[in-house]
Length: 330
Image (cartoon, rainbow, N blue to C red; front, side, top):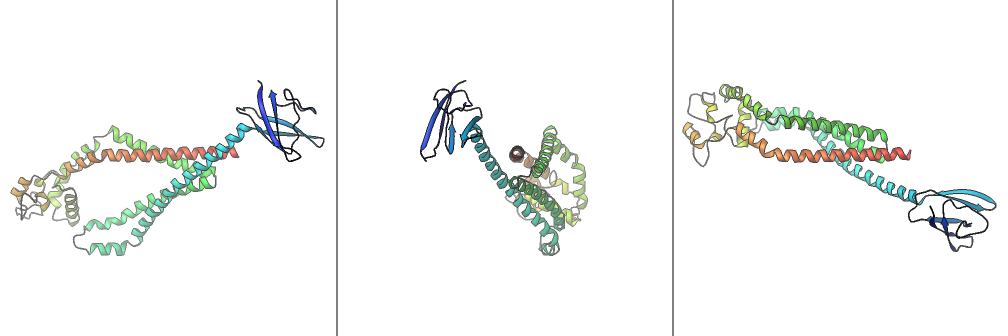
């Protein structure tokens, strides 16, 4: 297949010289230039142009009685530049994304360590504040979870950043593997929730007898349980597990006609919350409020989960693209 090739270069005299060749490539070199079949292009530097070059340009240049083979590919050079730009963009995205993960992990880890190390003075102050739930001591256990989550995020961010900057295939592969494992766990969890979407309601309903019995025996007697229920009812504006009757004959009543203040609607009754006021108020139980909370936030949870999954997929694609580019360079 014949093509028109345009070769331009700076000649020995410093002038711009342009020559054309029409025919198949490579050009047969001879001592007499021929614009239709063969040519001799004597320059100290040269460039080759072809609109749709797909083949390597193989040029034999005669210089000082010696022949030198020079290869140049327009398409390959353009492709190489495009790959370099793409690789640079991928590196930047990996660094920014994983830099954010690294900083978030460091912050979470720092909070966890602070809660653990300074828990004595912190909890001492909180426990001396009136109205603070006695279960606040469980805050120490949260520190371990924070440290674990922060540590994992720290490792992921470090591997992603260093793998991109240092072009380490080992780090990128490790980063990909960790994110893939997390992604698989999330997908498995989503499938379980989808298949057993009524599991939460069944689980909560199955605990009805035990929870109501616990209220009757321990509410007003156990300080930790009483504080927990008070905080829950205040937060969700609910009363008991099902309704105000859960507190009948509980230690809280002590033989009196009295119920937690959250079981009475402030706009309906004033003063002490008794049985009649609680009945007129008809405040919903915490079981119904909890189910409503789950249903109301299901869409938000699903959207957040999809967003996280999309970021994880993007991170895996970018890491594997860099992994492949680094392999091609080697």
